[in-house]
Image 1 (cartoon, rainbow, N blue to C red):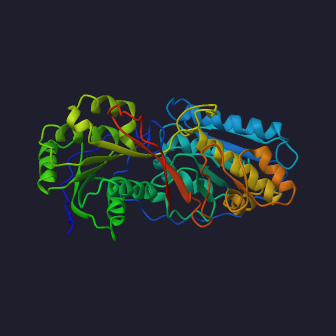
Image 2: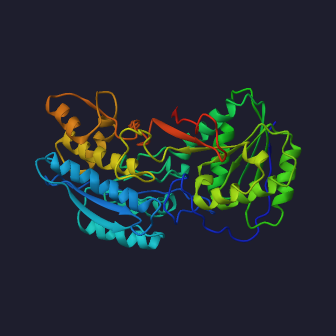
Image 3: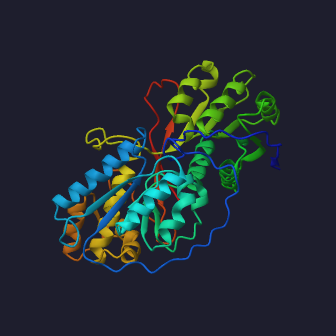
Length: 417
């Protein structure tokens, strides 16, 4: 039987960088409960024959902002070289997402005033949750390359919001699949005590249902608390074979440091989420005892294309996701023969699955011109959107470790929704 604990909340939780939980530098795990949103949708604007794409990404942020913006610009350049959409060049309007909802909201109004048909962004899950209604209510299409929050799964978007990054609910499934490979029968989960961590941990626990693996304990914690050592000790008292840590990079590294002071010889593995791959947390983890570091295995959405012979240019975290957003929008407009946002939205999933495989805008439009249904697979190799949710049906995940392995780093693996 799973033991779920609730602990008192002490103070505020600092905002943290979350690379593989998918955001910009200013991404944070939300502390408050996500309120149910009701969105009033205005009719989508009609087609005017000129596809215009707004870009709402963090312009001054280097880790995710710069590579994703460069990827958007590259995609649009390639589209226009290939003849554009509806016989005309695609227009681009750039606006800075910044690191707060207030900045993003001002930029959204700038984009909407320019009558963009679709917006690539936001990068941040938190900003997406705070500002999506402003975009969706105007009937504009949105495609985020990096906002992975599970709270967005059921967002009332009227079929206008899409993601090229898998939801955290799919990452939860990937984590459980990695745990299953260890052959363990007992796991315990420790998670950030906020809305993000609570939803994520429950999704992980739910994915163990039907498997011969017992969830022995589920323990919330906060990095600001002074009893993390006690939490770590209590967690080990539940005698897990695998410990799963779900937190941002800073708090997750802090919990690992507490675990490092204890006897972990009874553990087969310590599984961590993608936030532990940020530079700051990696530096802290590298100072842990080798015995613990050898146990740590991370799971994160694939951030970069893996083709070493044909590396994606421009490089950088989630650049391929942003590139795919642009191509999907442009191909959907081409297939519908319209730049009206509703027409684009209705074809976004269609151009990503079930037809003739194509990997570039040019090759895909050539197939469309012959009357073929297309299946766009961009540089990420897996680009298949669900028609109902607008999220990836399948995604690649990167296992990552903090020690040198004789056979090299672990290989990415696919997970189906």
